[in-house]
Length: 79
Image (cartoon, helix red, strand yellow):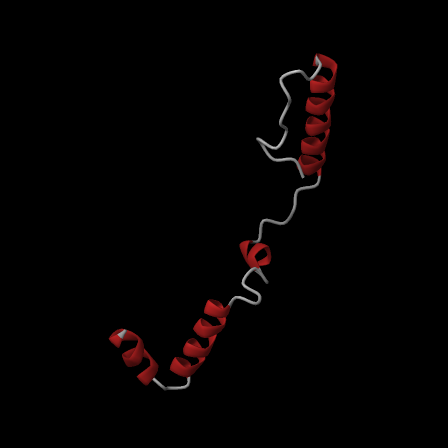
């Protein structure tokens, strides 16, 4: 996937090479426009917090609160 700013050209790059790089970027962008990816935000973030200790802690605390253990809220407020 080509993103703006990814194509970096050396000062001495020939005009032909620069045009070829721009044409390649345009071709890639045209492919992306022709086949757009799903924009479902949930699909985009699913798994993004995998192996994140802070997120695991949030899950544990949330589960405790849902099960009626509100003492975790009081402990966190004291910090």
